[in-house]
Image 1 (cartoon, helix red, strand yellow):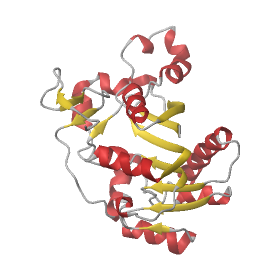
Image 2: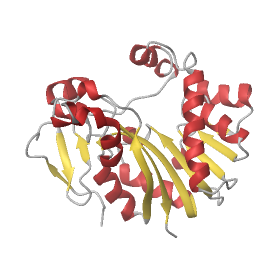
Image 3: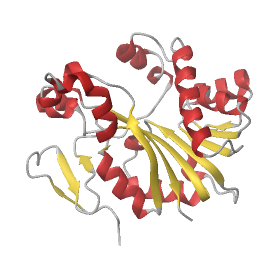
Image 4: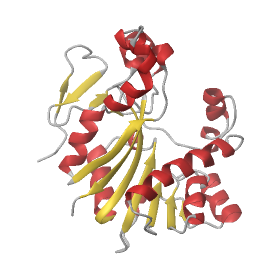
Length: 262
């Protein structure tokens, strides 16, 4: 029996279906696309006012932050680490510097080649779904990748088949449990056309639980109190916005570390 069982969301039947088992939302208007070099250049610049490569210092700083979280939770273990959607390899390079044995999958040939030729990393430009070696990994990382897959259950089954016992999952995803989702007009106007699934802290917890995995750490990746139109954006709660957001997992994006139970 399939984990994901979808029915139209009553409040937005033209846009969303909701899974009755997990609560995850399926965006009905999303379409599959190719991720070429322009994704890391023009598209990235349109969103962040700089290309992916111009943003390297910030991306490496973020990688170190994520790896330090992992270091504390894993008690400083040296891990066999796989990143799915490894882009130009900045996260993998920082993980390698920390002593981890790393491998990546990146479907954009230019970024995969940069990882191999410039950084000396083991990165393949084929889909990780085609990976059929017996080797398993102590840690698998996906940062804003999961939501791009149409066949979500197949992808998750593959991920957890590659994750060893007691292995760690590092995941960053957009979230509907944040201030932006409250403004539905803006939300749907700006919703990426290649994002098939929208999670919340509760629905990602339910999904990972199905695969025998528990969340050890979760927090918003960023804080946007200026977007908050509800009570959390008003005095005096606004003074404690970050603390409350961390407690509730309330943000437009989430970062989490989970661990496979067996």
